Length: 587
Image 1 (cartoon, rainbow, N blue to C red):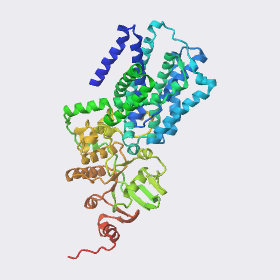
Image 2 (image 1 turned 180 degrees about the vertical axis):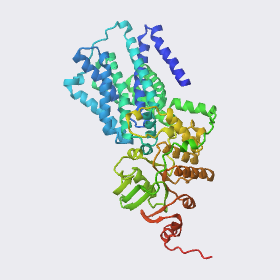
Image 3 (image 1 turned 90 degrees about the vertical axis):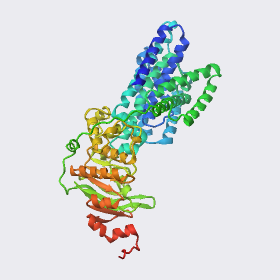
Image 4 (image 1 turned 120 degrees about the vertical axis):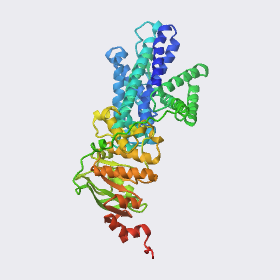
């Protein structure tokens, strides 16, 4: 709230400035260029700050907006300001087309492709002379208002666009889409496993990051009254955008705005006092290196962390309601004995290594089925095949009779398949409550654009956190919890989707005995309410006490199935754990 108050005060000052000082166009020009850079940095922050996909070609959308508005204004004979929104529309359409292809890549490949797209746009602008007039550029009419007030209309136009961009970014971050983008940035595979359609989310974010830049490009073209390929599609423009967002703090709401004003002021000072463009390139390169090395989180996050260390907030304590209210909202207990998950002939190879070979296994409704075996026997790989983290080389996987081995991970999740991980994979930058409400029950647009934490979902998250005994910590960052507490939060996260089958990968691993008892108690309560479990666990006494039936995996194959008592005495199981030369102990 304090940050919003400071932002509102700054906005008032910026609104009043041209009124109290209308006769100095140079400071107005510096500020409006700062507004334009802030628009670009805030928009870039949507795909590169929230989602973590670094784009070094985002100034392409500024050029697309400029050329769109310039061409239409000349052909239709209208003022460029009237068609400026069409610059945003064209930039968005191009972003969707490009994003559908380039967002299939990650890391360095994505960065290189975005640079290539920027350079390709510049080459097309040079060669499509019939449309863009090539290197000669496009000259627009001068503004119709008096030259004494030349910059003031542009000042307010860019300020309005900046306010709309920040408001849009703030709204988006509060939606399921925004939470999903942060989840993608921190762990894309985990995001997909809790129902986030990562492909759609990334494309939408890329398109959303282009619109206001395209509109700003249209207004900027009218401000300059001249457009040419080199100026419109300059790599230095993209570097400036990235530097502004990194300096202020990418992934935050106001960080890119603060960074944009700082970078713009330094850039202007370099132009005036240090010799122009070449000094700017040198300055920006050095500044980028310094920010990455010494201020990796940016100014605002660093300052916020410093403040929190010196003024720690008290943990809010919330009385926990009766657990029965949660159990009432769990799925009704199904008829025990019907096959819920069926695997037939499932295999997976990594080159010459056979990780899973011809596995056939049934998990029946209402059971807690254990999958045990020595290290390296293929248990986690089999979990990845079931949930879609890895594609199976052969075989069939069916959930409640429906074949799912060809479905994407989020589709399997929406069918009622949940999963926890051997090493917890929460999203540490989100609060515990945001982690629990992050899963998406379906792929509808209405769900994606709904509030991230609202109404019945917030209530449901609170109940699930109370169920695992962590309701009092709902507002705390997930990264601040102990390992065992993170295991419990991850279980609550999975339960948010009301799954029919939960795959637990070593729920007792690394957990202290006190919390282990709580985890076991929760599993039993949920199973009593009708939730089916498939559990991978190395704590054999826990497995024999908790699970029935038990399947044993060794060398990628199922070597034994049955009750805990039968598995405990099976010679093949003892040989898999103890080796081929084992002999019974002599009393």
